[in-house]
Structure formats: C-alpha cells, structure tokens
Image 1 (tube, helix red, strand yellow):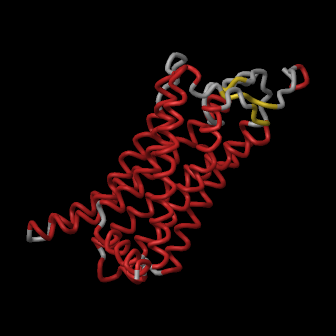
Image 2: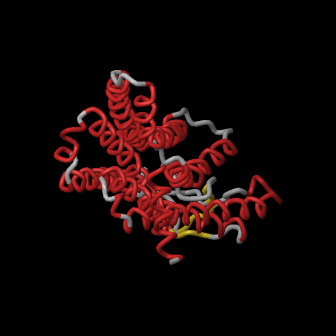
Image 3: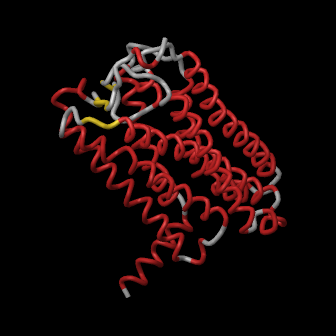
Length: 309
C-alpha cells in the first residue's frame, strides 16, 4: 500500500487519564505535588554537588549528570500531562509529538546507561581502591557520560526515524504522552517491522545495562565478603545501597513496560506503570541519594549553614 492512499494526519489528541473520569482533578493535584518535589529534589542535588568540593568525586559527578538528565526528562513529559488533566482533548502536532518522543527515548536510554556507569564506578571504588583515581580520572568520567548520552542519541534517532515514516490514520493516542507503542497503534499499515525494531532496541538498552550492573555487583559482593569485620562489610555495602535501590526500580519498571507482551485490555495498568517510570522513579533518585547518603546530607547542612550565616 502507498502512503498517498491514506488521509494525512497532522495532529494527535491524548486520551490521557480520561478513563478515570472525575478523579482527574485529584490526579492533577497529586502529580503536581510529586513533580514539584521531583524538580526541587533534583535541583538541590545538582546544586549541592556543584558547590561543595567534598562531593567533587566521580560518584557524585555521575549522580549530578543523572539528576540533570532526570530533570529534563520530566520537563519533556509532565507539564503537558498536567495540562491535559485540566484542559481535555488538547491536540499535539505531529512534529511536537516526534520531538517529545525523541527526547523521552534519548533521556530514558541515557539514564539506563548512566546507572550502569555508576555501577562500574562502585566496582572500581570497592574492588580496585588503590587504582581508583587513575581508572576514574576526569577524562574517563567525561567519556563514560558522553558514551551514555551518545548511545541514547543514536537509539532515539533510530526509534523516531522508524516511527515517523509510518502513515497514520488514527488521531486519539491512548496515553498521556507520545510513547512508542500507543502512537504505533495509530498506523494504517502493518507495524511488525517497527515492533521488532522497538523490541530489539528496548532489549539492548535494558538487558545489556542490567547484565553489566549484575556483573559489577557480583564482583563487589565477592570483595565485600573478603572484608574481615562485619562493620566493615556493612559500611562498604552502604555505599552501594542507594544505587542498587534506584537500579532495581528503574530497570524493573522499564522491563515490565517495554519487554512484556502487549495486551489490548491493559490500558489502566499501562497508564499506572507509565506514571511510575515518568513521575515516581525520577523522584526516587534525589530522595534515596539525599535521605540515605550521609555525605550528601552533610553537604546540604554545610550549604544551608553558609546561606544562613
């Protein structure tokens, strides 16, 4: 079939949370409060890491990069989602949809690989402490961050190119942002090839980082078990606890969302899952790293002390 046989679609309309009916105002308030906490938390983490010299280490450099990426990631999605909860049936142009999907895919993939880099950093710090400053020098850290971003950029371009060469017949997106599968459903033609591409990319950006993080933690745990004192083992593992918590939630949600079989009758579940990885997970990062990390809390106290004095 040829593209010219189809009516050209110029814009989409998000159905969003319309299935929740009168509860949309309640959802707006809850999501807005959560979003404010997410933005505030990530901005505080970035600022404290930048201004406190005690945190000018590879681990906190990667954390600041992750917080920066999460901040932009939420800006791409949540403001429009909040607007849709108040003003129903707002259209989005095809170009704006492609732009939103591009930044969403690029930053989500970037976050996956940044978490992998942070796992590698913990491996070097615990398993090769005497060579840590050499193996994790500024040049290496910069290349690892650029590699994460570059991988996200390449994969996002692949996604968007494959998606927006499709002809679209439908206009109602059964979601609250331009996610890949809901938009793909609106195509007029068979999307098997696109689904294969999407599944391949999703598998790569989830399975590869998970395997690398898993290997890192096998080696980390092996080194920790060699520490003679119980207190020493606890203290060493505590440096990994925050990262491990974020990793489990982040990769868990991503795997369920993009590697599970697609069901036509799982709209509510898909929406709630999407809320988890677009709203809850970005909030988890600053909360876990600030509340469970003594160095960040001490740096925050020092910053507040300087401001008050």
